Length: 406
Image (cartoon, rainbow, N blue to C red; front, side):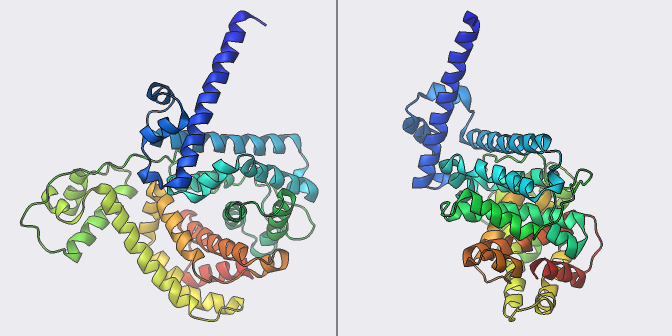
């Protein structure tokens, strides 16, 4: 081997070792405190490396998180695409599709510390979105079971993507208490049903409105003093600013205090009477929509949803609310705040007793698994009707949702 190659190998190993130490230090800190409480100086101290070494590899702790997410997703992509390339007859073999799912789940268990961090912490909320964004257009088989019921490739692909993410989340949340073979078999059996072949979605492209490069950013609050003559909160003014925010999001316009105030027809001083910063406005807009949506969900869950007709009847008003507020969801899906909205909503849904998918209970009768899966299936349906250009009313959507469960 040439001398230059030896030196390069040593440098590469040193870089890898340093980056691993920094990442491990960050993951250990996430076990002790929340992301917002962690400082770059603490990561540096815990890693055992110098400040110079940290900033040689990462610009900030936000940059560290983004690099971790992108590298992990790249690894998953490589595993999936290498497997599909080396198994040309995957659509004709149930054993091969099960092996593919096993290969995907094996990426989750390779580094348990990383998997727990990606699943449990708010700073990694965009990762689930990045993962599903990839799955929606990945060259992998789509679910046979839903194919027989729905005959809707786009919806089926959407649901399968959320389902896979939810199954991985369950496995991590239970600290991998069941084997790799078992979890891959549970997913394969639940989604694909018994026997048969699997259509490959090589021509299927499901539009995904969210930005391809989903990254977390440092939230900076502009510390401007609020005038002494602050007026009481006006619902009309707040609603106007929220509507201005959604319009700018849909138009791909730069969002700033100035652009928001111009669109709303108020002064920048008025903006600071009601909000601390642009992120504060975004957060309040999401919180309001979450509150209203969950009120509709809670009303639906008051009914005894034991069959498809019950689910369809009680959830029709929920989907009517979503379709009425379609502009909100399109804006959330288009911008990075969507990842926060998704994680918050799914978390709230998991606390509730959503309808239990009957097929899942036949395959794997675990209340936690059923709860997580049902929450993700519900949100997958929301995602589909908002993102995919279909024209369905609330009753038809509720029917589609109920068929997925039963």
